[in-house]
Image 1 (spheres, rainbow, N blue to C red):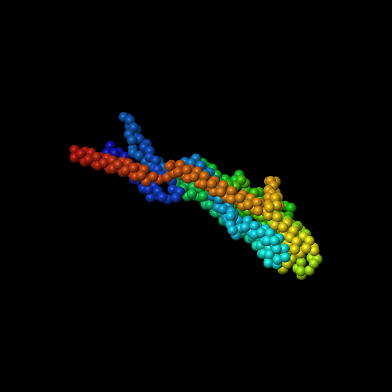
Image 2: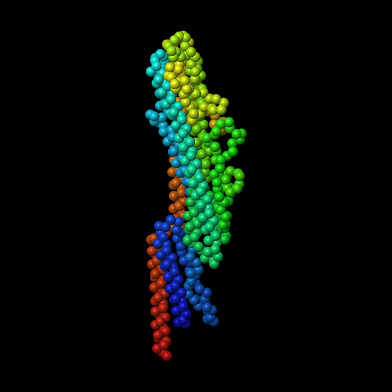
Length: 482
């Protein structure tokens, strides 16, 4: 009987020592990212049957489980994907908004005003070479502004492409790590125990994947997970299929180079575009394929129609470079488009004759009237001419306005989108934090709660030691009777 008491007490000591070690592990990792609270599950040992009934044989640890809720994990990862998309969209649109930098005394709106003002000044002094030099300078400044905007958009596209490539590389690396952990977890859990630390490592990778790529996770019965991206499988068992960044093939082949060639994400050897995309990956692809081209094409339309409008008026005038009458026909103010080289924001520039000599700038609409100012007035009036810029977007919607109002509309559109993305990022960040708090309420470590558990286990351990002492006293009494 005493041997049975010793055995029961011994099992209690060992089990509560294990429980105390588990609690110590929780306290030690209270601030470890991704750590899930663990708990020792206890169960009574199989009793021994006697004629007078079953007698217990002690206690044992059946498993060390980690406190985790799959539904809360799914909720957090869904929120993380939305937050990754909104946060990345906010960052990229803020950079796009900074390209235009309006309102700004050195911005496009001011450059347009100064350009039209220079024509107004020339109309007041149609014979002034100094006024023509100012027109030349303002025209060159305006052209350079268009060129700079296009260069900045190209720089932003290049950096965004690099960022996208890094993100895809990160996704592939995370996917490979998840596949490797799948293998290790299956092997480790083949004896029926849970590989808690490996599962925590894998969940950290899955959390990061959900934010970057908006992935979904399906738990399998063998302990592995299947990771879906878009409508395809990124990770299954021990296999991870890599993503790659590719450029779309434009058909028919354009007659001139296209700057904003659309990008697409491919999965493995599948030639089709991976869709739908979400998370940071989706925001970057949408920015490259939609937002940058939308701003660039509007700038191009504005540049093209500025050249057309100014040249149409200027070429009907006359110049008197030698001061003789009659004058000679004025040419184009800006370099016109050709069949092979259309006017774009990137190549807008003054005509070579205008750059060479400001006396080739026309103010007069009369061949015999060097003091006439009708051309200068006509060009100055383009400032307020309605519907001088017309742009038709990919959806078929048409935007029109004067040069100033059209540019303000372009900047306003980007600003509204940037502000909307900022607001959305604030909402999704809050939702993600709430989802994380709900998840931490189950899997997070509360040191106060662990200290309470420690005291409870300690009391059980002390009780077991007292049981051994009591058994020793009983044994001594029996020996003394012999």
